[in-house]
Length: 255
Image (cartoon, rainbow, N blue to C red; front, side, top):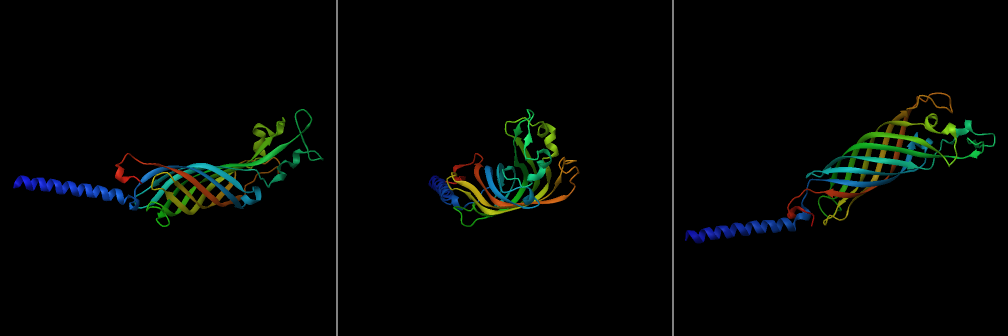
């Protein structure tokens, strides 16, 4: 009798464990997990404030680290390289051109210099995912706030011509190197696919930066620029996410 009772208990417990494992596998899409992820990011932004007086629209590429908790809070950091080909402060080289508006090269011929926007930003972020409109409870609308450091300048490139007064350290007198701290806000959608194949985020990002020129002297104006600036960006931000799951039981994967 006792032998049969022990067998019954073992079989009962085994059945319960198996049932629990099956239920865990079936309900995994409704479970919330904490994990890390990396992302490749891109963006397109419109300038605002003082930045709009210097540059036009710009693009960005970068990377991002994300840590998501079981409570769907997110934190992490990201870095972006900013670039564009529209510079609105076109008068910075006016003092270097001839009466015909031409630059003179080292060989005494006419040369050309092009102006570009270049910059970068890094920041830390804190956010929250609200599990609506997603394939599982780890996906949904996401709100994030961040703080970081922004730098931008005018890049001057001569087109294959030697223009000595626009090379090396001389460019620092014209490039308007500017940097400072900023805050940011992001609202969008973040998706972690059930089969770990389709993972991305997309949304609108706003940046408000408090910057100043870091060059002690501008050659074209023959004076220092000590104005405090308010540089702003507003645009589309997106990224492809690569989850960095730990080695955990299959019942905890998004399958």
